[in-house]
Image 1: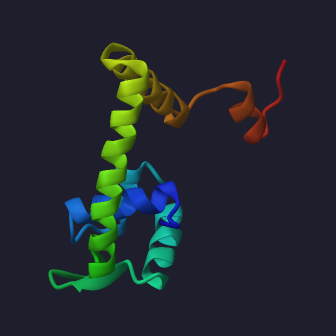
Image 2 (image 1 turned 45 degrees about the vertical axis):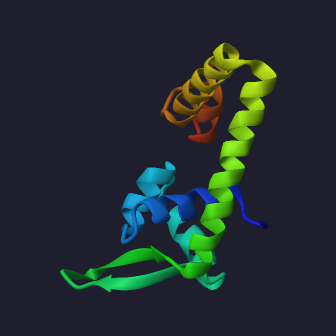
Image 3 (image 1 turned 90 degrees about the vertical axis):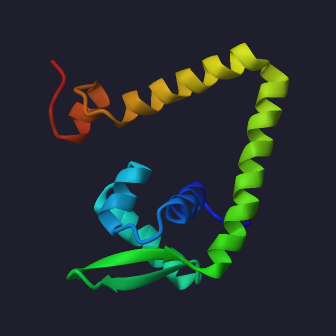
Length: 128
């Protein structure tokens, strides 16, 4: 489908919640505002998202999936289900559930701010 994982996730999020703001989309995707803004710009350029001024607050924009995005979302949902079914078939139900739990834990851990040596080095701190 020539979409990145994040683009696909954004489309599915907007299909589930049309009219979302940039900040709510960023939160849903676990991204910062700048990353979400660049992502939306690419989706706008691809004709997958439309932006509309919020009539209640003209400073805010609401994001909506286009017909093209809705069509893609049908395929994305099917591909997601097929992938999940394939994983379950290979690993079995118990191991598939374990894997989902471990991946969720890994994502939560990687997204949490910490004081690991890598984070400290990135922030300019020296290791003792």
